[in-house]
Image (tube, rainbow, N blue to C red; front, side, top):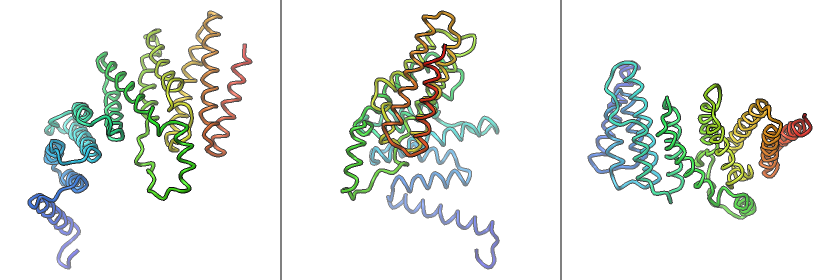
Length: 313
């Protein structure tokens, strides 16, 4: 702050300097995704959201960005679009030129599937946006199911397998290369939990049907029994491991409620067997990956609950 200016004057001067910096960089052809994202934040903070959106729209149309950088731009554009739409809904300002879901659909088509990290980031974000839309149409449900199946395939990669996790653990002692941080990893478990609970919304109450129940079971059986991802907590981040605890608990609660409603002894026995299988899978998931005393207590808790179910009438 200069001697003859107050805090507001200093802030205004600082904003003008930043605006000049971004304009000069553009004139000289200096560009990077980080610089562009900083510019977007600046434009948004100075009350120019439409200009920020235009900047992002132009950037993703350019072929100069790397796929990894491109994903960041697409995701930021979807975020800006969402913020503009929310502002328009409350104050009547100009709406966004594109919806977040349409932006993310375009991004998914443009991002090669072999750019796995970027593709997964965009795919999970698209799923989250589709699940927030109410009411969920049959078309949206079909799209979500297709995206979930693709996400499950992406989760089958070697770096999600138990063998890969064990191999990396051994190699870590002799490897000085920079490791992937937790922030770099996509939390697949959080999307799996969200999708499971979203589907459960249509499987409770008076409108519950056998098809809806089967849809819920199809999700958790695909993850827990037919994928590498659901085999063990080995190789997963702490956040993923905690979300998987929520996933197991939601599945167990679902089958417990369904078992309690069964009057037919044969059908009730079938649900009891399924519930026991869920407990056994949860125990194996956490027991095989280590994880310290907290997860040991989780395993013990699941074991006690399993014993209660096994020996209940």
